[in-house]
Amino acid sequence: MDRLSAERGSPQLLQVPVSLGEARANVLQAFPAWLFRFGDVFTQAGKRVWAVGGCTRDALLRRQLADFDCATDARPEEVIRLFRRVIPTGIEHGTVTVLWQGQRIEVTSLRAEAGYSNARHPDAVHFHDDITADLARRDFTINAIALSLDSSQELVDPFGGLADLRRGVLRAVGDPLQRFSEDGLRPLRAARFASQLDFAVEKATREAMSQTLAALAQVSRERVRDEMLKLLLGRGVAQALALLEAQGLDAVIFPSECLPVPAALWDALPDIEARLLACLSRAPVREAASDALERFRLPKSMGRLLLDAHGALRALPPADSGPVRMRTFLADTGVDAALLAARVVSALGRAAIDWWDASALPVEKSRAASTHGMREDTAGGHRLERVTAAQLEAARAGASALSVRELAVGGREVMATLGRPPGPWLSDCLGALLKAVIEAPERNSPAELLRLADAWSAKRRI
Ligand code: ATP
Ligand code: MG
Image 1 (cartoon, protein in one colour):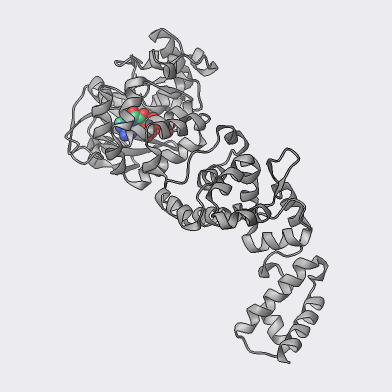
Image 2 (cartoon, protein in one colour):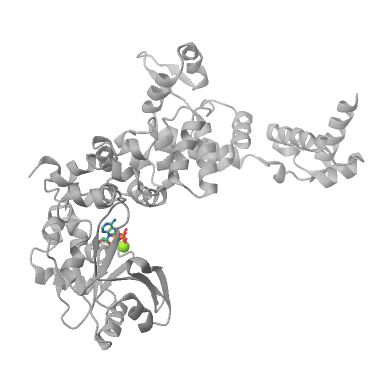
């Protein structure tokens, strides 16, 4: 066995039983009672149904069960007839979602696929009643284990999935090169599971990843995003990103500047926003970050937050800044983006300086030291001295307003007091009031602000 697929001895793996009988008993124990009642509906209609994919795998690993995928020898129309509430989610591929006793269960009719001419979807699917043939079209051996939800409660494992689970190995079902060429998302799913489960990828499967990049390039951004977000949140994210890089998938997924991120960083950044920003943090300009976000098709508000935070990464004030400078930074950047940037820069530490030094133009380098808040330390190396998220939090706590909306007076009161009609002057005036409040938070009272507005107006009329 090659180096990467060596036994890792992780506690979750040691709990996976060797014998099929013991494994079956574990799955039966982990599955909720409602799932078997769901199975009874099929049995009473003379049909069979199996729990497959993630739920069976995770039950064997004693992980928390997320969603339930089932396979059945009933055709999709028959499943629709059996239940009151069914959503035809992917009925053209034989998948419907059954809403059952407050649960959502994805039910796919046993099928085989033929002809992947576009590396995304099979040209044709045909339904049959052979569970082994259905498991053969699935991506990895550990995802190709099924438990029959009828009285036999049989565990079906035709491709050695249980043994691979025990070893902590991801192995494609069948010939990896062919399977990855059929659907270019599968190599990325290999990295995603490697991250979530902290598994190694078996040699032939791993090598096929770099040989099917053209297929990956054809996959929709939404499918890539869904896998990438799961990959980034996995506990093996560092090794999964290293795998993407080693196999050349990173270039298909990220713009060139983005990776790699130092492996030690991930534990300090548990949330998806911070992890995404860490990936973008090398991108030297807004356009590169925006290109990366575009590829991820993120929700608009999250994209905006990340872009603002990206801008803030290199603009964080030095650690010894006074409260006014910090409040000004928070107001200009937005509190959430500023805090996010500060957390990521603290975690990046030395690595950030190296990247930003390397990406600065030669003429900028002398200025870079001061704008990046760096100092020569006694050993002659650089030290990053930027504000931390905790310092920014404290500065926020000491602010009475960081946006015009938080001022103690609104535009209407200012217009009434000054007796002036609306116009561009109003936002200038409110901006001046905000600046005054950022400098001295105690000024944020209606009386004081209207007095300041009056003074501002008098000065501007001269
Ligand atoms: P999760 O815990 O994230 O739901 P999962 O393994 O259940 O993981 P799903 O995307 O829900 O993943 O898919 C359910 C099952 O369908 C998989 O376990 C696998 O057997 C099969 N499958 C999903 N996507 C593919 C694919 N692209 N190619 C082949 N089989 C797939
Ligand atoms: Mg699933």
